[in-house]
Length: 358
Image (tube, rainbow, N blue to C red; front, side, top):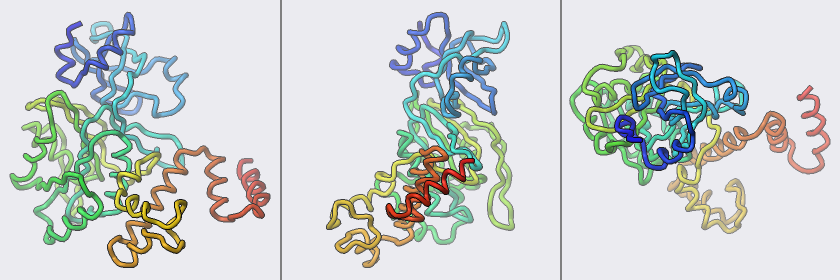
């Protein structure tokens, strides 16, 4: 089949070949999601859709459900006979996920099949290196290429200092400086957007993602609110996830702002490559970088070449990723092990876990 329309949305040969194995179904890409409703673009247009009952029954968690950017197989390719039913999600090339809000250990798929992730952080009240490390950790795990986008440069009075701080936690990662008010900076995003590729904007609420997308689109397609004078923060506007075709080629995904990014999985080895490199020079192969003699990581903290706060966040994110991949009982056991320590306390741990699970 000649997928002229879908190739504009990034259809590649691998996905096309996989889709050919589903007889009687139609290929499409999810362009919008809000709760359990979707819009899917097909070769013949766009159709509203929901997942089939069988799909819902066999899904093991939220991560199995379609996300914006996913390639899916549906039972129809236009809306002439009603809404479509999504039967299958095809193999994902990349997937940005986070742990669901609240106490749930389930995941939430944010965007799929993204080539480049624009991690947006404003240069005013939102500026936070520890949060940036968190985003980079999960971005590397997604298999998309991260690019740091520093917004609201017009509100920053210490740009050089902030750039130095960002560089200290993002070696080898491209950084773009933008101003949503002035006509500068945002054009540099175009060099990371190739025809038939997909980019996504992620970041906290109100950092200017929608403004940048409007600039790239050449028109206002996303609602934008002015920043509050009290704290310099923008107000959250995006409520759903959208995939849009860019006029210069390629596609862009906007995502709702995240008050907090809870990690379910992540790649600390890439996000904290400097610490991993130092660890290779530790005296002991199983060094925990907490108290061992000859620890190259602790030596770096002592001589000032490594920030103590960066090391603390490294440990924190590693623990969070470990807990995020465990079920409730396993997570409780892991926490108790850290609290109580050695074998002599195992009976107390098991008794506590047993009572907790009742």
